[in-house]
Length: 160
Image (cartoon, rainbow, N blue to C red; front, side, top):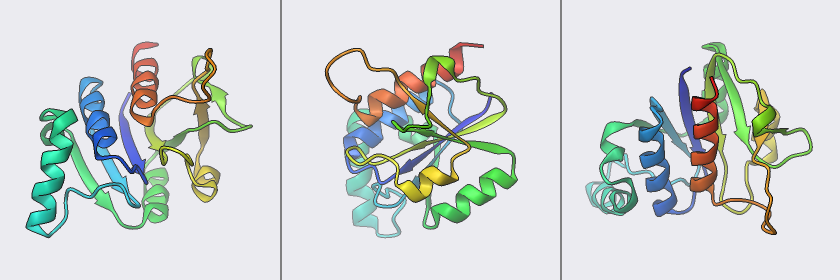
């Protein structure tokens, strides 16, 4: 199974670094960055240097292994992904979400991640082919986005 990640509006550079490290460990082939996710591909050398240093704190070099690209128009990118046979799967708590253990993935998956507090914007949720949700057993409502990414990638890559 091929998996790419779409990291949209991830605020924390440390979360982003952790997502890179986790993605590398599970063989994710590419990460698309969009919205106000830290853009370490900036054309401004001082921005690129600062972002690279911050991301490296948690990515520990995975940011150099996993291919990444900043996408200015996510809606167009999602349309392109769908046309190329990718299934857009949002990791989100939602009334129509399928619990992760019950989800039956197939084909190529583009795992869409949303902002740490607000999640995936409603407009983008509507573009998802599927929404998946990690069942919670404790008192908290959700996991940190980087942790949730790890849980989802583990499940998606090992159940087959």
